Length: 187
Image 1 (cartoon, one colour):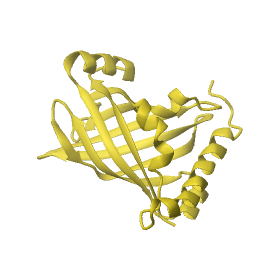
Image 2: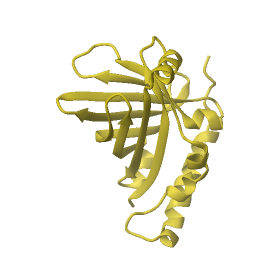
Image 3: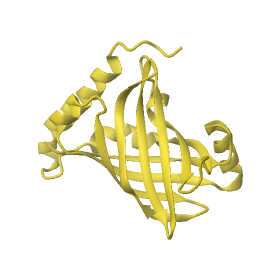
Image 4: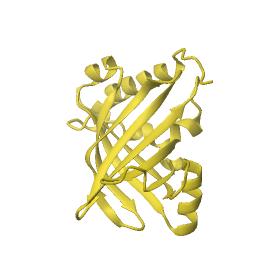
C-alpha cells in the first residue's frame, strides 16, 4: 500500500565549521533556506521491513541567495535509521539552478527516547557539485504548526481522507514503536 506525508522545514544556512555557526552566519547574512516536500512510501510493508525505512521526496527548495521554488530531484528521506548507538532521520535532497547542482545532506539526531526538538530539528550540510567542502551549513526546523498537523498530512493518495485513516494510523504506530525501541543512548 502506498502512503504519502508532507513535511516543511525552514531555517538558515551559511558558511561555518558547524551547523550552529552556519545557522548564525546565514541568519545574519540573509541565508534563509526552506523546503516543502511530499514523502512517498511506495509499499508500507516493504518500508517497515527495510532497516533504512526509505521514502522518496518530491517538492521544492527556497534558498534566498539563489532562488525560490527549485524542484527537488532524486531526493529521499530515511527514518529511524540506526547510527552510532542512536538513530537518525537522514535526508538527501538534490536540486539545481542552471548549470549549478546542489545536494543538501541532513540529519535529525534522535536520542534514546526522541524529544520533540530532536524530531523537528535537521542539521544540514549544503554541497555544490565540484567542491569538496560544504558551501554552507545550518539548521532547519519544522514549524510548530506543521509539526502539530503532521498526522493529518499522512494519507493514501488514491483514497479519501476517511479511507486513509487505517494506513495513516498504522504508520503513526510504526513511528511510535520506533521511538520506544530500546536503543543505547549516544555517548
